Image (cartoon, rainbow, N blue to C red; front, side):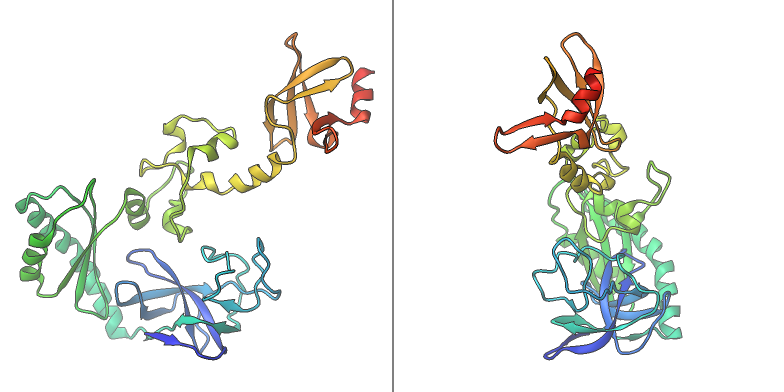
Length: 326
C-alpha cells in the first residue's frame, strides 16, 4: 500500500528483499523491525512477501555528489545519485529519519497463516512450471521458462521466461487460466535477469553479484576491461549468462580517475638526451613502464611525472632525472 506523505515525517526506513524474484526495495514502517522479519508490502507485481535486510543507509551529513553521506532520505529528489546503493553507511540499529516524497509503506507484518500460504505456494511453483512447459510445447512457442511465482496476497501467478524475439502468448494465457483459475502474468526477461533470479556460483567462487548484491542491471562494456588491462578473452571476462561480468564496472571509475592524472600509453618523455615511450600504465603498482629505442625498459612512479600547462606536455621530475643519470 503506497502512502503519499504531504509533509515530512519521521519514520524507520528499511531495505526489503523479495525472496522469490530477488528485488530490493526501500519501505517505511512506524516501529523498529530487525533483520529477517517477514513483511507484506507492495511490489511492482502486487502485494507479496518480503524479508527485512536491515535499516536503510543513513548518515549525518547533507548529500554531496559522489558521496554516500545523507541525513534526510528523499526518495523524490533527482539529485540523489545513490539510488542503486543498498549497503553503504548502514547503521547497526534502526534510526528514525525524515522522509520526503512518495514512500512505499510496509502493508503489514506477515502472519503465521500467510507464512504457511507462502510455503504452500513455493511447493506449487515447480508443478506450475511443468504445466506451463506442456502448454508452451502445445502452442509451439519459442520461449524458455525460467521460474514461476504465486503472489502471497493476490490471486495471481507470474511466469518469467526468456526468448530471442517477441512472443505472442495470448493462446498460452487462455490455456493457463483454464488450469489455474486465477490471473496469469507472463514476463519476458533477459539472460542477465535469468541469472539474477536463479543465482549460482561465479568464476570467483562466490554467488552471482546480480543475485546477491546488485539492485540494478547496469550496462557493462568491453572498454571497461580494456581500461583495466584485463584479458579480452571472452571466456575469462564473461559470466554464466554469457554477458560481461558485472564486477568489471566496480573499479572502472577509479581506473579512469587515476589514468587522468598520468600520461597515456604512447606518450614520449625525455630523460636527458633520450626519448622514452610509455608502453604501459599500471594503476595498481602506480608505475609507468617506459621503453627506449634500443629496447631498454624502466619503471617510472606516478609521483615523478607531471603535466606542464604552459607547454601542454608531460615531464619527468628533475629529481628522478638526476638519480637516473647518475
